[in-house]
Length: 113
Length: 112
Image 1 (tube, each protein chain N blue to C red):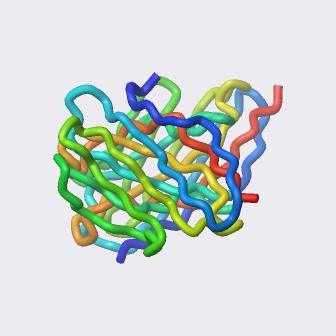
Image 2 (spheres, chains in turn blue, yellow):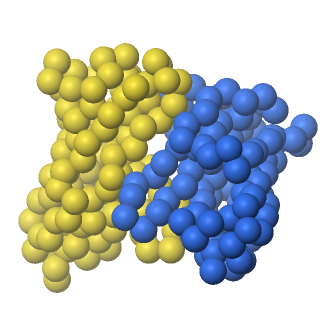
């Protein structure tokens, strides 16, 4: 158990809908990362937050957004969902968001029908 | 930005044999290289890491080597066991992009 929690574990929705994925980092970690893992691809970095502020942005679509709240939990919002958005979404946390060890959560499996 | 390539994509070995997975990176500013193991239905778990000021690091049956000049690093697993079967990812942290870049993964199968 990494100490990072993600909810929900599974999510099934329809195209065009909007969903919110939630992540709670390990106790003491200030930085949260979001990744997308599709069937044939590795981990694609989406976005990183540090202590409530956006720190780095990867291949995140404009239909996706995220935020980190004062209690350090983070939410990833996916809107106007398409079939191709079906994937595993992982959250990871680290102490300060630099070249430090990342701890991954168990992921949320999103299926868009 | 950084580009991390990982080979092979699949690897099958007999139990007890060694397994080697190789990664190359492009950004000379990358300075931290973790390896993750992902079992079915779970999130990636860090198994070993190496920083750019070190050439080799070992932890029991697992070792990682880094060649900064050639920009490649490798994961070595000795005396493989069936429970080593999983997908392994390499990653590089680039100070240029201030983020981690991951390889595409290697599916390792250890045959009993």
